[in-house]
Length: 383
Image (cartoon, rainbow, N blue to C red; front, side):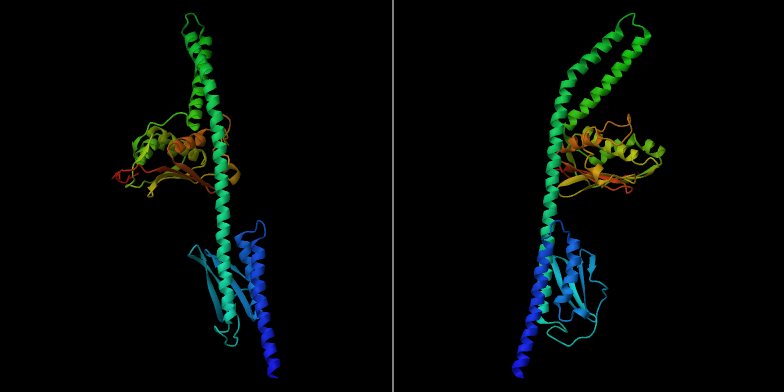
């Protein structure tokens, strides 16, 4: 009888170990599925946990990661709970929980076995490793996209610079001869008017070429120590009336202790004006525009946020491509953001965009802090 009981206990223990190993192996299989997301892994893991515990019919599972909750079917908190922390790179990010919904006999840890403690710890450790690996994959993919985007912009910039230089000479000739012809005695008034139109068109084309050269970084900035708050005040001065007329409320959040940056004030002003005009055009029915400045240890930032129509991911991927525009013919050249990108890049900075359809757009310009500068000590505007 004693031998029979021992064999039954051994068999039961082995069956429990098989269930535990099956749970861990199945988790590994799920995590290796191509394209599977962390959320899908967590949902499937919740279902896997129940059969691995001693009383699966009375068990419920919950996994919490970064505040997001995933549960087994029909989950509710039970009378007993076993829990293990999920840590990613040493930081607590969530928990794995197994609940018993009814009273069970006392074992090593309440109604739970010592082996079940080992299992839930192993599950939490494996989930932490999976999350870390998935984050690394996402960061690698994002970095690859950034490199591809930078390479594309560099190629376009090279071509744009070549085109601009090739056009400059014939354009200068057109403008010069049009001005000379307009000064000739006896030129009919109609011809003079046509010549003025030629001059105006040539000047417009020259302005586009200048923007192309800025985008291609062919025009070096003239840098001095600049107060970005002052750039904002100067740049928005001529646009405030237009904002008011369009029914747009401008909100200022300028950091009074902003460090100086080493920059070309005129070019940074051009960046600001481009961003503000884009925000204006994105709010045809009015709205709110927020201009904010701030700083970290490494950079000063300037952001322009609007409550306009926003952009989807497809548009966001193309906003820095020269001549790409969603505006009607005659309303934009498609060079605003590409030029802004070129200017900021020539200053060693970066531009970050956040947008969603119907949720507005936020553009943040980051510029490196000028070394050896003290705080500006400016007072906060009452605007």
